[in-house]
Picture 1 (cartoon, one colour):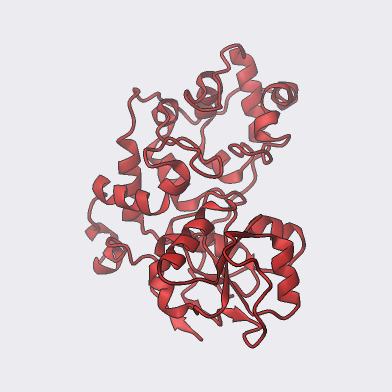
Picture 2: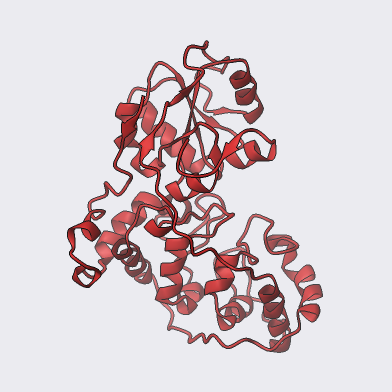
Length: 346
């Protein structure tokens, strides 16, 4: 079965860009539009009020010290381009996401409404510092939360190329000195200004070039079910979660199984389970007509349960009974060496 689908741009504002003759004709961003978009795609992880940590240790966007130092451009680029290699999706169309520039800026306008502290100017001049002197400070004070090289651990990936491309040295300094009140990120008031500079220099030493390549949005569903004439898999009826190894064993046995990638299209293109269909959690209802109710469907994400769980709930609410969530998520599937594929095609 192949079914042409409108990719989540089926949100009310998704056709704005196409309806305008040029970017000069585009309407201004709207915080009220941004509020709906946020509820549709961001609140699941960042919380309904931007409090953060609703899923996958997603950051607190309403943090006063964050919004006091995050410029509109910082927010815009972070939303549009995401944080590749993490569970923060790219939501801008150029990076394979569903939102045009007006929608991204509307999200920024809505998030900006949470700012309560005065803006702190953050320049872009390089901070003086020595990475070698920053390394022992980082190891002692930061690595337990952010990982030995800034790309491990459950919290913000400080070594992420996109973060380092958009965060100024002053932004990083303020984050170190003032922390993020109300979260696990404390204010390191005891780290001297010179040592802050050494820490920032260490983070800068991890920076890597970022890709400027545009990414195609998946637009069609291929065959949903692998081994379509095979038997049902030996899954536990009614079980919300099914382990990765159990799913792979049943797939290898020739059982009929369909994989549904619940993440944003940008994540699907970056890497998905081979043969999986792109069915974003926030637009699941647009895909219901194309999905079989008589075959087992495996919902998955990287969280590993938030987005896939939302997709499963939508399916079960619409009469699907043979549905489960890939328990450990797609990252564990990939770590096991099980089949993965990149690009917009299944």
